[in-house]
Each structure stands twice: as structure tokens, then as C-alpha cells.
Image (tube, rainbow, N blue to C red; front, side, top):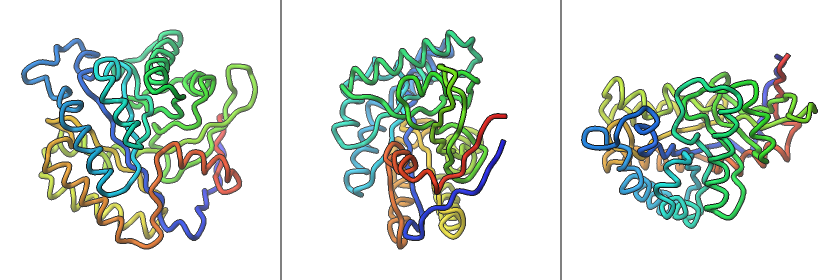
Length: 279
């Protein structure tokens, strides 16, 4: 593996990517759990969480990428269409939020299934993917590129975007943009699922993270979930999400992008991005 540091231009004091992982009932169904009663948290995403987050994005005038599992898109097609109608990006996020190892053929089948569902629903191509559980295989990037995807946002190995070089399905050298996402300190899941951190403390953590990144690597990727339970779909937790964005908007030279918009910028400025290759 080779690496030379990515260099963002001086006028971009900080790049900000906001991501909402839909994670509706697919999360339970994929684990063989009926999404009812205490396990109905995922149904909150489409009913309240996603509309609340879309309203917030419109009021604040910021782009956002919604990573949507195929099963949830089948269940709530109008909600997914509303994401696109409101000017936000829809990207892929597995079919049943797969959290198990799969053979190559099964992985490819599900990647293509979700892509078909989303692209047919939106009448336009999907450009990016985030692994629903962090799992990737040697074949994942090959399948994504064969479907025309330009970025992945799954890896946890760096603080900046980079170009991932690999051998594609045709046996040729190819690249995809990697937009690493921090699922530890810039994701609501560990705070609300495991440590039961109060929203006020999560806000303090995320504000501190942004301030440090603004004065450091200048690439801020925040991930939330519109579920109830361990998600950020409920009013007080969406308020935390909003307060973080308002805090960021006070800073000079901050650039908000959807993931696809920034991936395109990366493609157009390859000389500014480090390149990582499998060896």
C-alpha cells in the first residue's frame, strides 16, 4: 500500500459531508426479527425521522446524503423519492443491512438488487455506496465500479479522502473515490446504542470533533440514523444534529457537499488526492 497525503485547496477551510443511514425495518428483518413492538424502532425512520431530517436540511440550506437499504426502499418508495425531490442524494446501503459474511456471488446479487431498486425508483443512476456493517470483500469495488459507482464511504483507515486503485472485473487498473467515515466518535450509533450518552454530551463531543478537524485535516464526515431508539430521528436528537450544523456554518471557508458532489470534485482534481493501491 502506498500513500501520499491528500491536499485540500486553501479556500476549502473544511469539507463537510453529512450522512443519514436510513436503517429502517431492514435492520431487524435481516436478523430474523419481526419489526414490531420493542423492535419497531426502524419503522420510525420513514414515519418521522427522515421527514424531520429533510425539513432540517431544507431550513439550513445544506446538502445531505441518505444511504438507503434496498429493502427499506421497497417498503417506503415514496419516502425515498421525497429525499431526491428535496434535493438530497440517495446512495446505496446494502439490501437487508447485511451484517454477515457472504460468498462473492451472493454479495454481487444483493449489490445489484439494491442498485436496481434505487435507480429504477429514482429514474437515475446511484453513484455511491456505504457498507451496512463495514464488511467488504475483494470483489466489492469491482461490482460497484461495474455499476458506475464513483465512490465508497465505508473504510475507517484514514482521516482524508483518497483514490483507491484496484483491478476491475475486466482485469484492468481502475480507481474509486474512498470517503472514509468515522463510526466511533462521529456516529450516533455507539453513543445512543451502547453508552446511552445524553444528547447534550453527544453535542459537546461533535462540536469538539469539528473544531479539532477544522484546525487539522479539514475533512468532517458525520453519520446519523433517523431511527428512534439508538438513532437521531427523535426531536431532541435531531436538534443536536441541527446545532452541530449551525455551529459549523459560523466558520469561514466551510464547504458542504453531498457525498456524490464531493466525489466528483475528487475525480476532477486527482492531483490533489493521494492514491492507495492494493499490493
